[in-house]
Image (tube, rainbow, N blue to C red; front, side, top):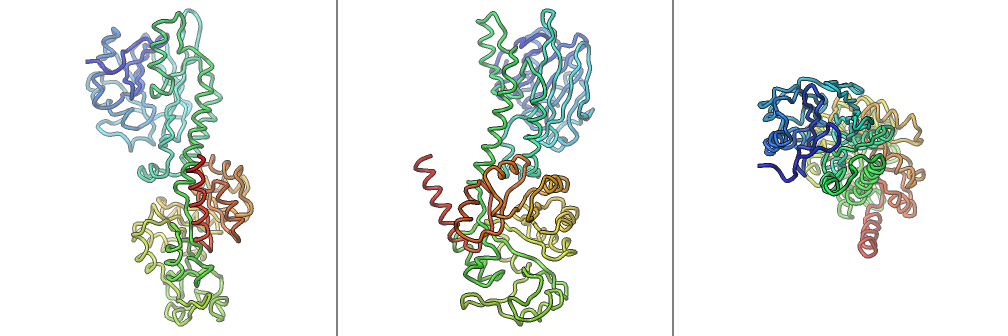
Amino acid sequence: MLGDMKPFNLAGNIYFVGTYKASSHLIDTGDGLILIDTGYAETADVIAESVAELGFDIRDVKYILHSHGHYDHTGGTPKILELTGAKTFISEDDVKYISGWKPDHFYRDGQVISLGNTQILCVATPGHTEGTFSFFFDVDIDGKTYRAGMFGGAGTNQLKKAYLHKKKCSWLNRGLYFESVERLKQEHVDIFLGNHTWNNQTKENYERMLVSDTNPFIDETKWLPFLQKCEKDAEAVMLKESRDSFVNYAHRGASEYTPENTFLAFYTGMYMGANGIETDVQMTKDGVLVLFHDDTITRLTGAEGRVSDYTLDELRQYTFETNGQTDKIVVLEDFLRQFAFRDITFAIEIKQAGIEPQIADMIRKYHVEDKAIVTSFMPECIRAIKEYAPELHIGLLTKNVTDDTVAYLKQIGAEEICPRAVDVTPEKTAIWHREGLNVRPWGVKNEELMRQVYDSMADGMTVNFPDKLAKYIREQAEIQELFG
């Protein structure tokens, strides 16, 4: 039985043979058939029946091109291979998504796949997946040549952090998506093929074609507006996440009210509404990771020297005081033991070079890889921890953001930029978001600056007074609910 859409000749030598939920296109090259995407496993028979209804023999499929590795584009491949013995193509980066078959060929960016009268240009357009490819080829119709094109992965829900976490993908995929859209804008397309039917209104255009003297699929005005919509959709995903998943980091705990980087400060911060904790890590003389900010211990203890000059037992002799409240130094492992299971995000700042492996090992031990981001003002430290533990999220604290700063972050796989709060504007946040970067400003000195940062659509911020930020977030949510 055929699927929920009738197969049809879309334009020239291009045929639609998929379903509403999963597009598949057949190309008759005159010397064999090329199939682009195979849909779901459960609809593989639909493709075979559709090919037959159009008068073709499924055994003539020589090449199967996959736009990317998701199941709704590759699930039918094992069954189609049983029927055809075709050669398969996919990006090497997307092999992790497939099952039940092994690719014959991996794409190269700019590769041309030729068969018969058709030459398909394969363009790397990552973002939707790490290895998404888009396709472009010429089609001759009544003596005129048209350019057909497909964006291999236009969906934007896959840019959400929760999805990226689940698939073990970098947040930088979001930036790659925007780069891919910009690259695709340089391509001229007369015949826009939908990777899904709703991309190019396949069903609606087919119905129009039945009652029209012209082919609605041949329309050079459709490609660019679609790409512009993709951009807006991606921006909307990131903006919504910046509100729904905004992280109110208690800076060294609720440090305006309690002794910084102590259990009292951390628990107070959570009680005040923080959904994240920011803290600093150094190593003692006897090799213990502790939470301490300053280069020296003088400000908090009155004593001379650095943390690394003292053993843990020696540091435990000192008491830290703020507003008449006192507490003592905290060991990183004790902190994670008490907070790792909680639904909070951790911003862990490296304050001492050379301790990156020990920090990474502790994060792994307490299984907070997806809930922690490791930052530093020292670029070499975040590079080092990323090289040691590639799965960790890293970010750079910086006093000056330049194009070189952003390029460096992308080069080393850093996913977060932490600029000075006074430098943050909605325009700058939008630029950094398009690069795929999470934006978390620091140095929020007062409530006015706090509001400015939040309203800039940043993804989080560190504050000494998490109660005031929590209150402002609630107020803004109420306003949004009332007025939209």
